[in-house]
Length: 354
Image 1 (cartoon, rainbow, N blue to C red):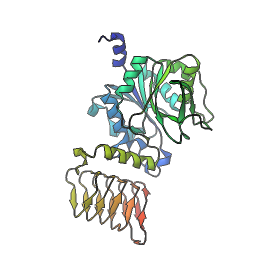
Image 2 (image 1 turned 180 degrees about the vertical axis):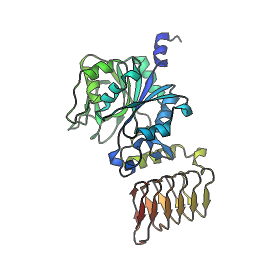
Image 3 (image 1 turned 30 degrees about the vertical axis):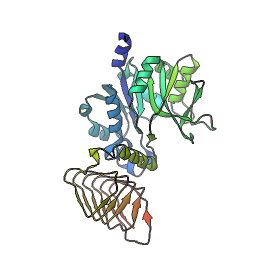
Image 4 (image 1 turned 45 degrees about the vertical axis):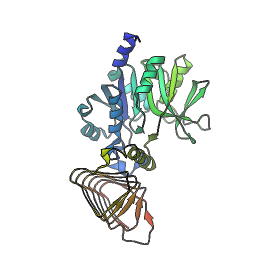
């Protein structure tokens, strides 16, 4: 089978743009002291999963849009060496919309085709398929869609006879159950489309408006549907759901083994459970769907469907801790044994006595 050398040349030059400038207001208090894209899910920062997916698709040049949390993101992510990619950090001084972020990255992207991913998206599928479809169909843009029961709160796409006819950001009424996931591929024509739109009522340059402008001016916009699960990790519930999904996917792998120098004594473990390094778990019941970070102490506790971040301490919680997110270096102790269970969202450096 023969391939067009020019097509493969363009694919070889494809870049990726990851948007990590958001502040994560729905994840407070955790995001008062850490970037939402670095919150660990199954003991790995959300942003790391995205970079791994991009690197696995063969893309070597990655730009990361950063905002107020840029120092923390740069310190944790580094130059990209661990993934064998090159990472460029692109400051977006003000969060003026996804299309504005694309404009901000124009010097990095130049005339390359590019994959764009929101930095709080987690998903099961590989990216190879949508990239291959993009180069087979040669549209101006391609978007990944996900079918949901309740599309309110998302950008949506209207599809008729297999073609996208309209995209709308958070429509006031139901027009489609296909939401835009936050994974896109664009060619250089998106810049002209962005230049021809105006800020939305919320004062942002919306990427949906730019895609609609492409459609209105004769551009070709295609789509793919997600395969497997996909999560926008914008809320505590979404973080816990992503944690459950990732633990399920890796339940049969060696990653579920405790980390180095971790001690587990007199415990019942209901897998999948993940435990980091240098942690101590004594006389406790864990799982299913529990991720415990490094340097954590858990004594006399029962924990299910929860994430406990590094350096925290949970002791003598006689009742069930469930559906909880416990921040870094926090202490939790439940003295009121009259409660049947506790559900907690705790920031970093907190002390909770119930």
